Image 1 (cartoon, one colour):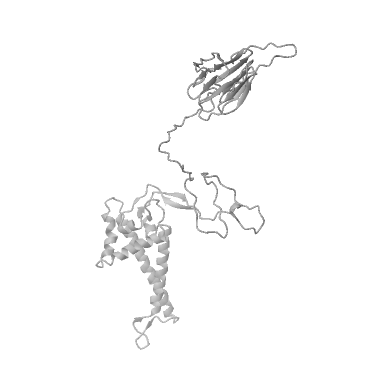
Image 2: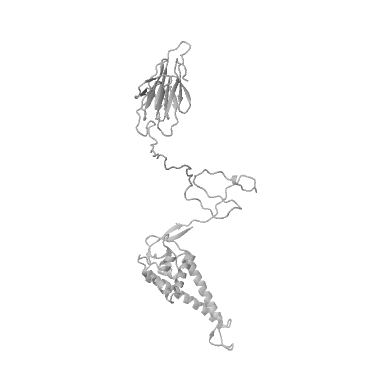
Length: 395
């Protein structure tokens, strides 16, 4: 359902136009009362009703109660219709003819019958002040310094009287207060509705559908929240570090990192293993990652957050939500003579710590030999060499 609302081009109605609209309504009341009295008088002329009585019961100059009652009924009906039109449409007959509307000062929609009644009560209450207060209230629009000509009765009802001639009107949708339909139940007909009859909703999830109403429960109107409720922390967050969000670029080259892109390169070549006629000699190394995993590497492996497959190379993925590890961070090579590591042009670099405590910063594609017990730090993660070809496993 929609209602019509004046556009923003509508201006406050002049005081003279407002007075003219009230005078038209008063003339209409007089005509209505005269019409009611005329009907009763016509019926009295035909002898249907007595229109006047004398003091002795005969014809006289006193007015019959029928005339007063008929005029009162017609005037009362007219006042009721005018009141409803004024509240629901914003105009009476006089205001309609003069192009004047009484509307809400903010929404420019009709104020409703009760707020129209508030305007009338303020005018009548003004009459209690020396009998002339009502006239002062009716003249109060002239005292408005804002230029909007809002009287005291308009201020009390949060209303404004506008001149809508030539301003045009907009259609504004009005929300229908209808009870949403209940979801279809899958249980037995006639079974009671319990707390488990509806699927659970995750905490903080926004409400996207109608709110179900349980029959027999509380029938009061429950409105959906304007914003989804969020679970507050149980800890004091005043001393927590501030984590600034990082804007990620999607749909770009898979090797594009947040800080700088790495150039495309091939794995560091690993010498072929020469074996016997029955098959090649298997060389392998065992690594332990910081997340507790133990990985066996044969020949070559790429380590990173999401390493790309490049030929027959083993891939070791590291879960790193902080993105401190590059997509392809480093390479591990296993040879019969030992194990080496090489940085693949990572963002945060690779550092090797030997068993004696010496540290080596790996250059890009530079092979650094590892001994059993050596550790490799890359980003916020690391690994430790437990076993190399031809050596015993580290404790």
